[in-house]
Image 1 (cartoon, rainbow, N blue to C red):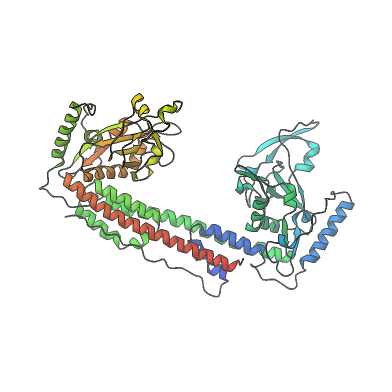
Image 2 (image 1 turned 90 degrees about the horizontal axis):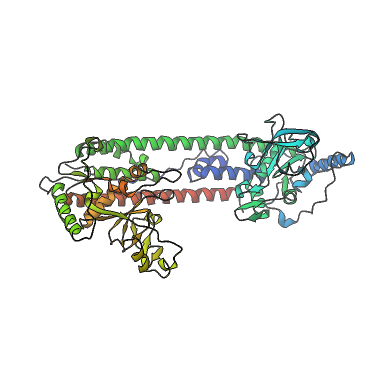
Length: 594
């Protein structure tokens, strides 16, 4: 009896909405959060609505920002007159085209430099004469994150005590990063006396209110919003992958100023909504971890099956819950890997005791291999030691054999001709495959070619169509990948080339399935330092559970059909995610009109 596996596609997702009496933003929270990257976009939406005055109701009793602005200017003039601060150069009037959106009633546009006193920090490595040295911690760009200070790695700098007043941070100071990569431009947080005494580097701007009528919380909120980040991105100077803003650009930033009580209400509301985002994010992480554990546990019941009958029973137990299990592409990937494991254990298709056992196939392969050796077409392989009982990963079905791949094939590799010799590559017509090209199931062309001269002067071999290529090393996921040549080609030394003696397509496809199933196991065999490598010896020793040839054909056919269903499932889930993302974008677009 065989296990009959049918894969049901997960049903359509149900969009969960809050009761209609809630504000549209809250009502749509779950919908937006379900989309890929949804919580990140929710945070951006909240900040955008906040700085545009669309998050909390306005109060006609609030003193308008125009009055607040007069107070700020009057207090700033008083401090200048008393010599406590210096008079800055007047900033340019704000042109109408500079305004990123239409202001809410009672708000005012103002340059950031007219509200804040902005200064730079300690320049490291400068030549100074220190009369009264003191060593103190200082903040670098890496320490300043959006919304918080990271104190995991704080360095110290020596300055003169007389400069403490210039560089020392005070509770409530706004810290704004000059730049680095794009995400580091304009990162803003508030210093809250995390250390008793602390300075800041010159690549971090320090901003203090020019008057007591100043809310660092509102300033932090705006400077971290998508509106301000768009300004910084537009204004930043870019070199290669780095970008930065200067003090003049920071001072010139167009800043929306609401009434002071409204600033407080907006900040409070944003904090509440960000806590909700935190909860959604934590819930998503928890659900993802729980879902992965559930999928792995239930799929493990399939691979733990000892007989096709047990597999059928275990499959029926979980098949009714596939709409819950297969609701994300990672789960479908896990199912496909499970199918491969079941395939190479003989649990996917019925067996036929009348079929010629694998031992007979091995005799034919040995005979053909001896003929090729006698003709000098391949080298004689060394006698292999018997496989220890402990090395057998599972009980083989009747008629199967467990043997190293070297028993079934001629396994070789390639090399890289010297790049210093132009005659090896220039005008070459022979495809030369590298390990990076094993990411696809088939190799129909090569990115590089070598010459006949390279072939004659090096140890390179040209392998035939149908050769299996295994990546022995390479970056990321490359190591352990298997592909199949659809062209004649040579390879570099990072590839193992497996030329099977048995020429049938079913046999080649089955061996390829075994290597695909063994991807993680093969990678674990790697040795080396920063970039672990395989070698040809380890590839040759890869154990192959070999069924009768006719059974190999049935397994390949069954796996192909089930993989097709998995591909359809994956495509539907990706389409569903795309639909959710578009729905989320549409909701955000309605909440924040252009």
